[in-house]
Image (cartoon, rainbow, N blue to C red; front, side, top):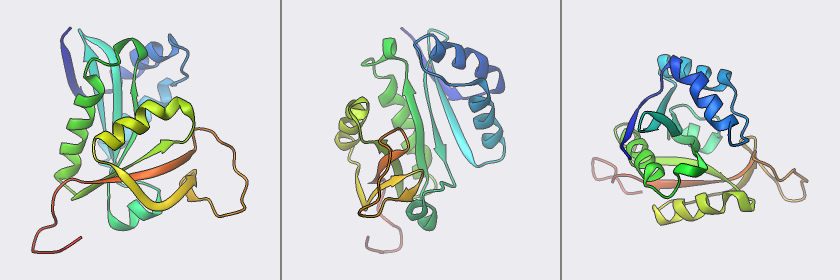
Length: 176
């Protein structure tokens, strides 16, 4: 199997949407079109992994995340990281993450990401810890807003714990 990773293009939206729909994941064409448009505006980088020319997975780097602790520090956030189930455990996710972290490192000493809290995210939680990500210390958030003690929230894809990873030491003798 030959793996290529490249920037997502407008023509990728329909094949990507169809590939994810085939495994029961709703990823509308408009989502990918929005990612490509945001990429054109410099707000996001969208990476596409192809296995023998077929969509295998993707992720995006949001250069201006809404999550306040990352936004305030100018820290990019890896978002919407997905590898189709039949392509998992073949190094595709690792390759996407390596490239995304390399892109982030060009602009920031730190990168962030959010991960869901229920069992479907277990593999991702383990992957991120093994890659050196640590909780950012701000607790859980729902739709990028911190969840305060006593508040009831729905445990769904919008309830996440944010993690950060130091990519390089700050320049100029600063200490972090």
